[in-house]
Amino acid sequence: MTPNIADVPTSAAVPTDREMVRVEHVSKRFSLRHDRSLKELVFSALQRKKLADTFMALDDVDLTVHAGETVGLIGFNGSGKSTLLKTISGVLFPDLGRVMLRGRVAGLIEVGAGFHPDLSGRENVFLNGAILGMSREQLEERFDDIVAFSEIEEFIDTEVKYYSSGMFLRLAFSVAVHTDPDIFLVDEILSVGDEPFQKKCLERIRELQAAGRTMVVVSHELEMLQKLCTRIVVLRKGKIIFDGDPTEAVAVLRAS
Amino acid sequence: MTATAPARRNPSAAQRAEGWRAPGQDAGWLNPLKERFLLRLLVKKELRVRYRGSVLGMVWSYVKPAVQFLVFYIAMGVFLELNKGTPAYAVYLFSGIVVVNLFGEVFGNATRSITGNGALVAKIYIPSQLFPWASMMVALVHFLPQLLVLLVGALLNGWLPSPTAAVAFLLGMLILLVFTMGLGMLAAALNAAFRDVENFVDLIVMVATWLSPVLYRIDMVQKSLEGTILWWLYQLNPLTIVVQLFHVAFWRYSKPVVDELATDHPYAYTLAQPGEPYGLWWAGLLIAVAVFVIGTIVFERSKRRFAQEL
Image (cartoon, rainbow over all chains, first blue to last red; front, side, top):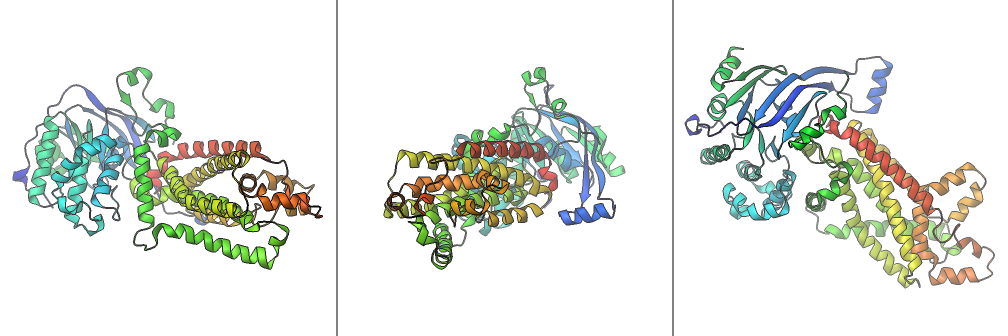
């Protein structure tokens, strides 16, 4: 669901000069490998068939993010936004170049990726919190806040498979925003739940900005990003084609 | 395309002093020790998921080995008359079965641990070493009831705990776990690239029961293979070494075996194991450590590709 643009708060981010993320000449090539079994591998070797087509998901990308900035990544499908985010989070490794970070990172690459349907909400909060890097003490301390934020107190001991998709996303988002890292990597998760909850999420994002957190956000909601970000990077076919003012960035993408 | 050397990819000492680090840089094979809290949650999840919607739950980890034991006991012990030459054959058999079962479960689970957690591996950064370790700990949870049954069975058959038994048991567990985790990590890394590996692993597990002295006695192998290289290979199989150690721990010094050895029965001497009491434990430990090191290196090298291979 697209958030109501009127609800999107204006950015509260306060950019500083301290570098938090450095992406240096990063390239990533993906092979579209269809061959999953040894048999197919042997056959294609015998027939001298080309094994895999490759494409550049990221092509010599340079990016520096400073503390307190909220940087948006925009681009059409397949432009390498998510790949870049995953490379920063450490899920993917660059083929060329390198990425360096300062401070703790939480990648909200996909809300609820660490959730298991057969576990209760409570167990999932602990499992997912730990996966996102929280310690046992932090989790025990913040557990009540997490549940309160998600507004599903009465279902917290129910197995997650019985949740509605909205409840599920609320709990997952709630865990994610309570991890309190220095750098937030956010991929297309701001369109979570119903309108009141969305408002709450955006409010929370604003709080994090005001608290000086660094954010890298991927989304297709251009208007929302325009209001939320201090800077927007436009990607096309794995290359950065624009990096700067949010309004201009959106214009660049729309023009291309 | 040439990849940047990993050394160049990591921040320099000066940069590290400023707080820089590379994403996904972790403690490598020490991760399971550093991330104990997460590891425990993963084990809990695994156990929970394994028995979802099952009425008997953990009871299944008693039922399966019990049936297996009965089948082998009837087929090998009664029909093939192995229990005639072997006093307390039931204990002999079961102490081997628990070893092979633990081997099979650790190896099989670890092999599937990366592909099975694909959703996580591909989306969120977690030290991937935790997955094979979690599957090993799940296997240990299932091993415990079997061990209890074995202890009771051994006690009923005139076995008494002794320092020798304790040492043999601990040595056996150490060799078995180090060896199997090495194999498991190797197979898990390869399985992420080629799913054929898990079928191959199933095959190895199936064969393992028959290529170590679980059902029969090792002197029978000696009789037919002695003097050939195969006999040495058989003896150097870490599983053979572990099964023998378990026999020493739970069977060899029990009353029926000791009594039989004292008789002048023509074949009684074959009950004594070669190199008593601990046999080739040092060779087993050496091989296990070597396999563990290889498995860890292969796993560490390939873990960077897991996310894109799944």
